[in-house]
Amino acid sequence: MRALAVGLLLAAVQLASAAPTPIPTPEPFSGMNAGTGDSTPIPVSEEDITSQLVRPALFARAVYCSSPVVETWSCGEPCDALGSNVKVLVAGGDDEKIPNFFVAYDQDKDTVVVAHQGTEPKNFLSDLNDLEIVQVGANTTLLPGAGDDVKLHDGFAATQGRTADLVLSTVQSALDSTGSKQLQVIGHSLGAAIASIDGVMLKMKLDPSIAITTTVFGLPRVGNQAWADLVDSTLGSSFTHVTNQNDPVPRVPPQFLGFQHPSNEVHISAVDPTGNNATATFCPGQENDQCADSNNILDASVTNHRGPYFANISMGNRFCPL
Ligand SMILES: *[C@@H]1O[C@H](CO)[C@@H](O)[C@H](O)[C@H]1NC(C)=O
Ligand SMILES: *[C@@H]1O[C@H](CO)[C@@H](O)[C@H](O)[C@H]1NC(C)=O
Ligand SMILES: *[C@@H]1O[C@H](CO)[C@@H](O)[C@H](O)[C@H]1NC(C)=O
Image 1 (cartoon, rainbow, N blue to C red):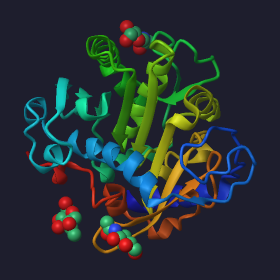
Image 2 (cartoon, protein in one colour):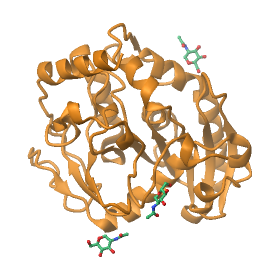
Image 3 (cartoon, protein in one colour):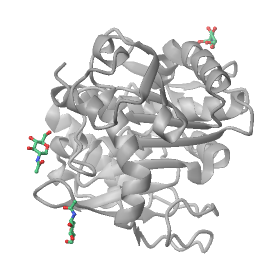
Image 4 (cartoon, helix red, strand yellow):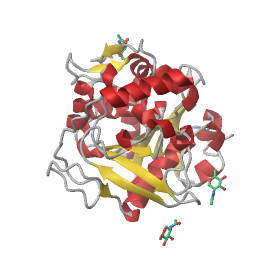
């Protein structure tokens, strides 16, 4: 199975003719030369990492903890690292068809947070390399702005659909009851795929005055070119997907099966031995061939999928045993 996966990934590398589409967007990270059409990666400063990426990464780690300890915010270090002012409004998941998820109010940041758990990369990779992958049209009840040309990975769309109504209603009541105007949507791995669909859904459904930020880690390709364009046009620079070194997950499903990433990749090219200092670049355009797409697939590292990302934060069941 592993040999087949590598073979398909190699085919993807050879067949994919990545044509990065320059998208003019406002600056999510200082130093980004938006709108110039230049795809040269731009260093992301330690300040931007600290202010924009560390807290989302901490939430993406905490959602791997079981719902009972998340509900009471007693999941140990993954919860403690976020402080005690996180009020969980709903937490669920069944370790099968519904990965763990929660909706919380992050009082310190006056932000409502939606987070989705991922899955173990080994099983995930063989599924995502399956040539039988089916793309389905978007559910326009959930994504009313999606055209007929938008196609999503059927498994990702189905998994997102299982929590969509509860996430939407909980977020709506949380925004109403707290008066917050800010929403942060987060996920890692499979959870990153769900979070990116959630981000577009919430942007289409909620009042336009709500500022939605979607930050995901280790994102696989979720849909076709029309989907990638829809993410770009709906979320713009409020969407960020972080890729870590030689993680193979962002390379699947392959582009030759009709999958495409949206814009706004932040690529970590190196992490120091303490796991604390990441060297990261902002990669303009979709499928920037100087970032995760340039990785040598033969060096693919499933360990890189787990992290560490920033501030020695790794994600997966083993990083939240409670
Ligand atoms: C689309 O989403 C709505 C709302 O969650 C759900 O009731 C409906 O069954 C979904 N349709 C399909 C085809 O999955
Ligand atoms: C980094 O995190 C890992 C896993 O959580 C832990 O085992 C290790 O001790 C941490 N390293 C440092 C330098 O904090
Ligand atoms: C990261 O590296 C810089 C310079 O190499 C150092 O000054 C800083 O303390 C490091 N930060 C962490 C969190 O290790």
